Image 1 (tube, one colour):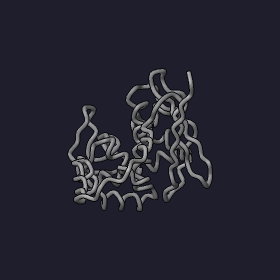
Image 2 (cartoon, rainbow, N blue to C red):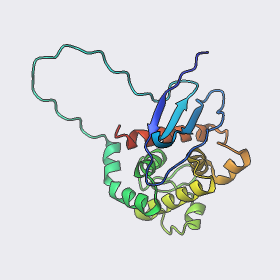
Image 3 (cartoon, rainbow, N blue to C red):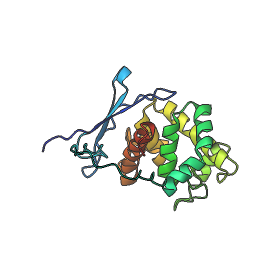
Image 4 (tube, helix red, strand yellow):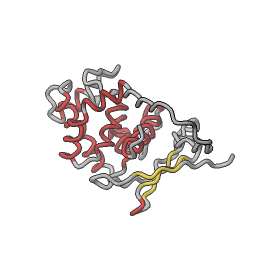
Length: 212
């Protein structure tokens, strides 16, 4: 089977996030490898198949005759919700030394920017804090957007420190719990977490690169 590599470069944010290799995924899941290339930034490599690659450039065409200027596309509902909470997310990112695009990617994946979101497992708010995690973080009202995002940002920063600034493991711990990551010594082999980690990192890259 021929190897397919799609590579993205992530510019370092306010805090350098140094990711090690993800670890082998299940046979049916893509294997994503993350390496640090110093000044060139972080590189994501998909070894098994397509992973949201940039579309190939369209072949050049003859210029069309001038016509009416096209109207800009209307923002999607998700983009509108992201914009509505951008100031709050930016403040939390600055307060805890995290890239704003990373927090945006986590929130988008967790709740779609819905401050009233409740998961089937009982996770709450924009950053989907479990009640026990909210209590640990002293977040009295997880449905309060500012408290929820601040608590979630603090939790993510703590997980990065706990797992040696390995972004993949920190995200896996955010999704499955730090105990599960420590027991397996890597990304837990459940389908949800295996899909969650590359999804957040892919979204982080696109947001940081200005790709919607």
